[in-house]
Image 1 (tube, rainbow, N blue to C red):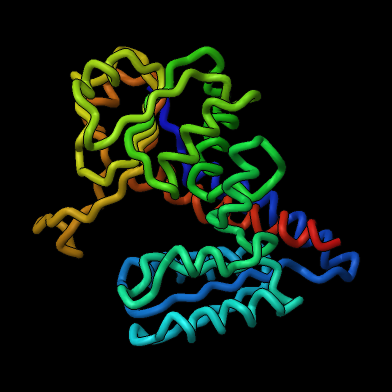
Image 2: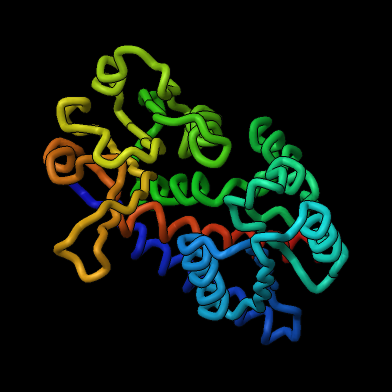
Length: 291
């Protein structure tokens, strides 16, 4: 069994991006600028956005963090998005999800200009991805592809099972794993909460990508020997033995599944760090597209 070490690979990618930014500075060019809007005080979102700001500093990007209260109206948020769309100094920006109930998430995603949509959620970018055109790939799927590529995990002709069908991970992964090229060229099955006999399907899979959000859902008896396991799940589970009172757990029963898998991502330290690294990479691409 080999760990797909997202922490290490994400550091490699950040080093590569930092080197690119250093070249840009040396030429007197404007460095990439990533902005993030966060609405409200969701603890996990604040931590995640804070990590993005630190990552920007680490690679030499400029960054702007815009905090708006949880009482912000949809109109106020859309006005702020319009400002960022029109600000030539901002190369890319994200609106941190989830949003408060008074705001329509789809309206917000639609309002972000596709050329600055470094999350890759806008329908124009999603459609281009589905048509195998050059575009922003959502950061988490982009990170998974990068892990598979850098560890040279063979995907051609393999049976990939995706557990979950969200627009952020499950659906884009099902498209990307079936595309022509590497990683890709696999035969993809999408499963979800209404799938019957799921163990029958997962036990035939060469590659399993689980993005369900159910702690320890995937058990050793659900996979075949030497399967490749990508765990996208991340859930806080109460644990009195830890200082914080909780531990981070993935979708996969890591202790037992790792004994059968050929490759597996740990949680934490697998897909999570890759997401931020690929958001930076998308921002670098956005900056390059403006030249």
